Image (cartoon, rainbow, N blue to C red; front, side):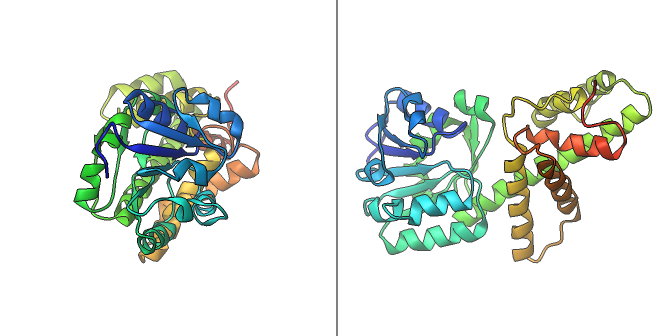
Length: 300
């Protein structure tokens, strides 16, 4: 594989995360080709070459990055007609940055190996503003030599990497992290509902929580949303949070582990989506907790 800035990179998926990732790769001098199902988004990455098909985008690529919503989207882009698997050159890398299941990661590893390619999982932590600032935390999983060759890509989009031994471990690490975020949101939602039921001004509790030992980047970002019941615009949609919690529970079953708290979080997210709240921020799980407490979904 060539060294940066000689890497030919394809970015497939130009949503809230994929577009800033592509822009940062362009800014670092990489030759970037982009594809998106909705072609209107191709114009959002100045300096990249827009492509009308997956095959066109990856035909000469050293690295093809997928940043897509779920297993189904990754499967279609990879295995579908004119997909990534058949068009990516031998020796190239499919760098999967989506949050997906352990099952599809194992499938991708085997399929790419059979075509003389390599699949590396590299999910990330960080919302769209973090992606735009090239401050993502990247968890690449695969052979050390492969990760070393891909280091210029990680440096262009993130502030730190946390290497894992295999793609499956990288995917599992992301699921574990997302579960911790989702579980923390449930705890915060219950705590703020408890305080409000007892007459505590949520702004007072907000100052207490973020100013004491429970302060953290995750808490500091989400607690104001929960305290003020302001869940739009969404940085990460609740329906995608539910998708990730479903993946967590699928992984736990595969590994023979019971996760009772994850099941509670799943139930509340399912309820929120059923109430038409799938597009609000993931912190909007608090609306279900508030309603159960008799407080109403939102503060008025």
